[in-house]
Each structure stands twice: as C-alpha cells, then as structure tokens.
Image (cartoon, rainbow over all chains, first blue to last red; front, side, top):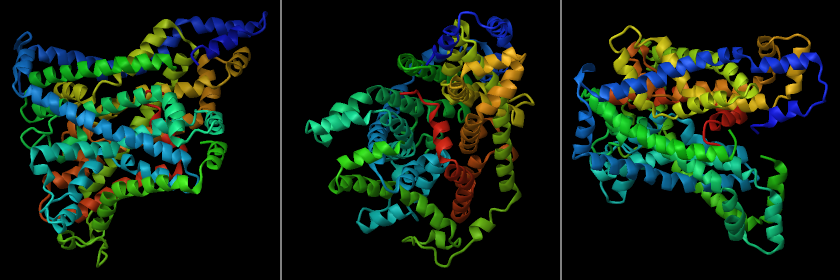
Length: 310
Length: 286
C-alpha cells in the first residue's frame, strides 16, 4: 500500500506533459512542511512538552505542584524503595491479564458467531457492541448501581440464594475481580470489531475445500481461522493491553484504587499520588515507569504494523 | 460483510450448527443487558421506589420525575460544555489533520514518514502521564479550565488516529486526477480544497462521528483539566451524582445516564457503518 501512489505515477508514459512535470517537481518542494506545522505544534504542546516537564519534575523536589530544588534520582529511588510498589505492579498485572483473558476470547467468539449468523445480524451486532457504546464512566457507574449492596438486583439474587448482600467493593480481592470484570465487559467489543474485520478477509474457498476434504468445524477453526488470525490476535493483545495499562476511568469511578489500595494499578497510582497526595514528583516518577511499560508495548505494536502496512 | 460469504457458509452450516451460536447470543444478552435494563428501569421510577428492596424491574407507578429533575442549570451546562468541546475538537482536528494526511500520503519522504510515526507513537502515550504534567503546568495560569485548552488536548489525543484514517482514504484517490488538475493550473491548496476534500467526504464524516463520540464519552480530560463545575463535561455530570449525591439520587442519576447516552446511540443507529469504521481505525491494523 505504501508504494502504491508512487509506482503509479512513475510507470506512466515516457514523455509526460509539462504540467505533470511541474506537478512532480512541486512534490519535492519544501512548502509541504507547512501542511504539517499545525499538527506538529499541537503534539509538541500536548505530548512532547508535558513529557519533558514530567521528567523535569521527577528530578526535582516538589510541594503542591511547585517545583523546588534539584533532587536527582531521589523520586525514583523512593518509587522503587516503596514497599507498596510490587503490590501495585501485581495489581496492574492481574487487572490487565485478567481482563485480557476474558475480553480476547469473548471478542473472538462474538466475531465468529456474528460472522456466521444470517438473521438479525444488525441487532445482534448492536447487542454485542452495547457495552462499548456506553462511556467508561457509564459502564463503571451502572455496575456500581447494579451491584449496590442495599438496593441492587445482584444483591437480591445473592440474598435469595442465601449468600447475603453483594458487597463486592468493600473487600480487596472481590473489588479487584469486579473492576477487572467490568473492564473486560466494557472492552471486549473492541476486540470483536478488530477480529470481525480480519475474519472477512479469509477466503471462503479455504473453508469449502476443507469441507470437500471432510473437515469439521473444529478443523476449520484450527487450520483456517486461527492461522489467518495470528497477526490480528497479536494486534488485539497489544491494543487491549495498552488500554488496560492506562485505564483510569473505570477504576476511578468505582473504587478510586481502594479498598486499601487493592485496585490501584500503576495508572491509578499516578492519579492518586497527584490529586490525593499532591505529590507531583512522586506521580511523575510513577508516570515515567508507566511510560516505559507503554514504550515496550508500542515497540511491539510498531513491529507488527510494519509487517502489514502503515 | 459480503453477503456471498455468509450465504456460502450458510450452506456449510446446518440448523444444528446454529444452535451453539444462538446459545452464545443468549448468554451474551444475559451478561450485557441486565445493568443497562436496570438503569433504564430505575430512571422511570419514583424517588422512593428506587430504594425499594427487593427491587422491582418494572417501574410501578411509571414516573418521569427523574427526567424532569434533570432540568437544572448545572446539568444543562454539562451538556452545553460537552457539545462545545466536541464541535471544537471536530473543527480543529479536521482542519489540522486533513492537510497533514494529504501531504503525508502524496509527498512521501523518509522525514515525513518519521514525523508521522512519531505522531502515532506519541498518541499512544497513556493520557494520565501527560495530564498530570498539563495540570501542574497550567494550574497557576489562566489557560487551565478553558475551552481552548481542553479542545486542543482532545484534538491531540485523537489526531494520530484521525490522520491514519484519512490517509487510507486519500490513498484510494487516483493520483491522475490531481495531475490533471495540476496541468490545468491548480495549485496544491486548490487541489486539496477542490478535489481531495469533496472526494474524502465519507472519510471526514466518519472521523467527525468518531471525534464526537470520543469527546462525548471522555471522562478523564474533564476531570483533570476542567477544574470548576461550570466547565465539566457530561461524563463528569454522571459521576457527580455518585460522588456528591445524598438521599435518593438514583432516579436522577439513571435518567441522566439515559439522556447522556441518547446522542451516541442515535449516531450509532443512524451511521452504523461509518461509526464502526471510524472507531476501529485507531487500533493496530491486523
């Protein structure tokens, strides 16, 4: 795709009219850079500047967002000496991997089911997409209300079964499980859409020849569908992991990282350090750690992007 | 979604084969629908009925007091703000990313590719990382808590995806059209304005839809960079009921959610195809 337009022009007739020549010459001129000035300015302002500022504040003492004197790598030393950090990293891992393990198969399965349906396709696609159409804040708060220990229907069901009220957000483990499940619930349609796009590129002939050879559904899935989706699966894993690693909203509207820090992922920790403890340099140090995790994921994503097309 | 595909596979599958698929659909409905239905039911209850336990799914008596109670100036401000942020971001993002997408597609060079990769990589940086810096940089200035700042931030977050999406559209336009225009004496700006722009109209529509839904559904930007209540967004309005609510606010809360969801839902139902195309363009292509 990337060389498409270039080859098309160069393979034209040997003696192009002068206008075309002028057009091609114009392609080389410097004025084209004017077209990317605004977008570059916006990115310098919103991403590059703040990233440098984050590194700067991490290297200084701060009190209430005011930058004090230079402190070297102190805030990083504090970050890694913090006895809570391993727990936060563990929480991030459980949250991200947990949500991934649910959202990925759910997305794949939904895509396959949708691809094989013949009736009510549109309605069922809407049904599958519904959680994702809701905002993250909505997804978090409606579950909060649904699971409300005093008035929620979930509580009524568990009480009728003799388990007592569903007080999921008051105990550390169940809160983490709940937040993870809610995130998976909200995000699986994203995986589904990516899979759906990839499924449509698989040639039907492959399934037909497999059928002629007497292969069943399981064969079709293992020998045609899965190999074709290999790259897509990697892409979806990366997209979802990036989403989960930087997830703040769903956690923020339900638990704010509590109870006793059990749902505080690294992103949530950045938020809490910044807006609860007013510890700018600490938040910046955590943010840089988060940024490092993100860079690793981005590099993997770029590797896979190069193989396909940009 | 070619119909031939499904038809041929339909021959493959029998009625029996459809059973697990429909079982999966029913299971999904059982997982997806209850909280949504519960919110809808709550929004139509009287304030005292929302606190009834065990809960009743069908509101009786049917009441619109939740919806009527929404008509406060604070609430309408949330909606107006979100609308301003969304429209502002659509205008700004389109006006900076269309030229960029155009030159990035037609005037490829190593440096241009590097710039575009840089933009894509930067737009994957976790939002919270740049937000804490933006907040602490501007908290003491007049720029925080203003429409322009929030619009620029929203624009930056979505620009990478917008450019990528528009590039795919521009790539599909035969370059010969542009060459013909150049022969007739069109300048580059004129080519972009008179030829490219009309041809990528569907792409622009998809991008506009995508930006609207993104801004409308975003919670974090409004939480961090809008510091006073009168600048907050719709999503902040939803969560405000939970964080500051007392008494029986659940009816109002549910009604607010339903009303806040209406724009997104109607855009989705009206433009399903473009909606999905725009929303998935951002992810790593597979």
